[in-house]
Amino acid sequence: MKAVEKDFIELTKRAINCEYADDGFFDETDWVELYKLACINGLSAVLFDAAKGCKTLPEDIKKKWDASKFHVFVRQTSHFKSLVEVTSQLHGEGIDYAVFKGEAISECYPKPSYRPSSDSDILVSAADRNRATHVLEKQGYQYTGGKQDKELTFINNANGHMIELHTTVFEDYEGMKIDILKQANLDGPEHRIDMEVNGKTIHTMGIDEHLVYQFYHLIKHFMLEGASVRFFTDITLFVNKNLDKIHFDYFWKWMDKCGYAPFGHNFLTICVRYFNMDDSILNGRHIEADDEILESIIVDFIYKGDIEHVRQNSWQLIYAFAPYLVGEKKSHAGGTRGKISFLFPSAKDLDISYSYAKKIPLLLPIAWIHRAIKREIIQLRDRRTGKYSAMQKMDIINSRLELFSSVGLIESEE
Image (tube, rainbow, N blue to C red):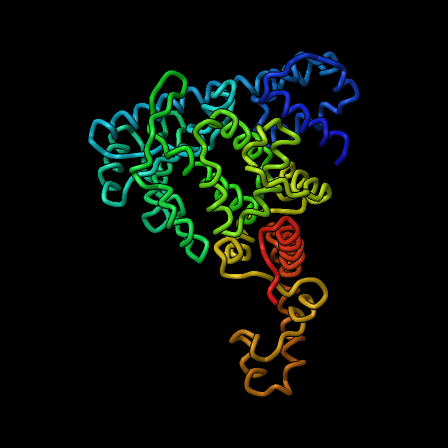
């Protein structure tokens, strides 16, 4: 890792563990870049109390950082108040619900209102979806879109608070690994617990179920869009706060069943070594982790999967990685071999636009030239619209899949 990356990780560790003394560690820090990393990872407010006492922190950055922290605090306080009003109404209507992710995790932070959330996630049964929607509308929320009735988004235009109403924690993803996780019944109403956040009581998922879900959720972000360092702080603080309630055998059983255990060991080893997580979560699994692999994971999280700063719109690649997330694929034709097959596909791999070559294989070279010319025209258009070219997509996909393989998330086919 670069010096500023190491400093960012160290400052993050100190902030979540309330270690604020200035011992000179940050005397040579590049505060401009460190502050950028804090913002990229949604941790500016969380890190401010640890940064403000450092004598080398420039006053202009300190003021900007303090203003950012205050903005997060005001926004999160307002949104949490709105969330409590909604959940109180749901409870009053006899609707079973669970707040998960964001606000339910923020309670583990030293100052919950310093952890920002883009929205609030509420889980209800499919049978209660319409009644829950009515409650939201009465509270001033407007429907803005959804995913096949499994994840409906609402916004309160008065304060900008967004709520995602879920009837499943898996959205519309389907596949072998999703089927396995559904057997764990993570979102079952029998697992609901009460949680105190900022002096208010909300219903959330059970501790064990929420931890397993958080791992699925972080892996989903890591594979599909890029995950931030906040996943390390979320899980470190969640585990440390709930250490006496977590059943480690349960956690590792589902990690093993889903094939997440190798990555889970790497991820949790990072949490222990770099963020002061209690190592009992490893449950005796003292497998020797490769330092190079651990560092590659950390750096990837620091830049949210875009180390080279080339990613434009992460959604453009989601469908390339989704089959690996849900267990439909194991490996890919990467490297030179993959590029050759992409540039010079066989007749059966051509799409309908080149039906002449599919019918008469001797015309295959003409189809390759046809495709190349068409691709150049599309790339010129894509450069103007900010989209990836086909070759850019392939390079990024290959690079990401090689990383997923090295950290234990996908296996190679025999």
